[in-house]
View 1 (cartoon, rainbow, N blue to C red):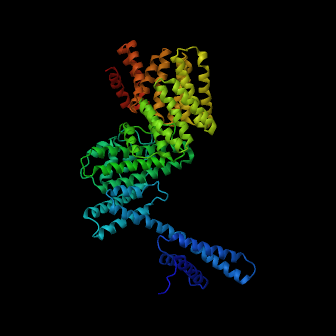
View 2 (cartoon, rainbow, N blue to C red):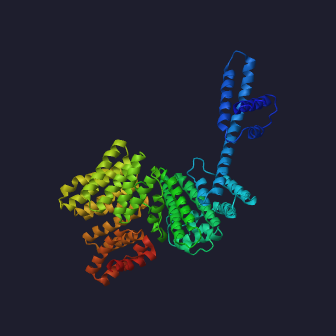
View 3 (tube, rainbow, N blue to C red):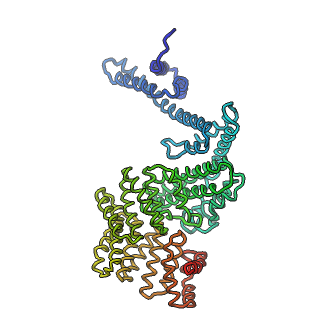
Length: 623
């Protein structure tokens, strides 16, 4: 029985054959080399071929460098060029066959898994080292159709049907995206006024309405609902006959839209800060939409709804993981940046659920940081502390020092909200020390602001109202402000300015407070922090009240009350309480007259609907 050559021998022979054919002029194109590799190299044995090619390249390079025999040197130089051509086509072979291997694995897994949607979303995850591009996604749909058109005795009819539905969903999704792609940012140029993002009044010429005009069927219906401010939860309830192919189509299109927008916003070189702000809005807007769809499917009466719920959670986590790896991930922001709208108000509870299913990772720590900060803005300080503690533990394990410092700062702020000033000081002191050790200037600016903020409130609690006792705390706030200004970080500037304004009110210096708070509002607007805007307006109203300026106090309190209530923060009750006191002091008729006098200025900030909503809020506060 003849000896069977080893793979190494076989591959060395193949390499030598291609080199000799090249030297004889029998290789006419690189494609010919590629085809010989396709026929001669077995899938799964690439490491052996690569080792053989490397050995030949090393030996031939040495011969080409040798000056002992000019004839042999010349031949070696020509052989080296042939080997380099082989290496180039080998890299191409690897790329194509790696994709083929991924697709083959995906097909086998989808054919045998109980949850084929789960497998599909996993193999198309943008967080993979080499995620599938659109052409490869199209190839996957083709392979799925091939599976369906040639039934195997091993595949049950139900499996065949679901593979067909996934294939149809991918195909429809790619077709829908081809119509939408040219209109990805057209809404930006059509929008003559108002901030860019995913908020605005229902029916505005924003992204969803622009995309709805290019979409069909279920996708069009979803976009129209989002454009009109309808909750995805309610939209799901209205769907009948929603199937697996519909879900896959929506998944393909939303992912393309989100990735396309982020790529476009990230390239806004004329104003990188605006671009980052809009990218943040995009990541959060799409993550929230998927989380709310999960909530809707969880309430729907449809077959295998758990599969759709889990699919929504997968999409949410994939988006958040990509987001958490971006340099502009807002460790000191909250989820209300850059967008508003009724359908976002329950976002936090929706986003919290998929994170419970995730193991501790650096990305999870950062996402929990964002959610914790947002929970505090809503007034849920206990939940915020829990989230920040989880994030702190994970960040330490993952050696993510910036995230660790951020959570110490957030814990300090949350403790102030609970009047636990000693604990707040402890957390902020630790943040100051760690940030200085690690050279985290942004963390240090926030830590100084939080330390001064905590000390101001502790002094007030201890009834140490002598301005001299506040001097050290205010000095820390000034240091934080100066550092944040040097860094150009508007979020931290807004925090420091707000803290300084509040401190001035506490020491009975309302006139000085106004300057800080007005600048704080401007910084918060630039950074997109709705909570800080509302909080600054609330304290600005307090300053004007103490200066016996009812018109300005009413205007600022109305704006603060409305903004805080819109994001669901319980802090709206603070300016509502001040307005109630003013109404009692002025009398209802005089108060209403004053409110009408300020109508145009209030409408300029929150619109007619916002102005009309103010009496409802005051009535709700009094009830």
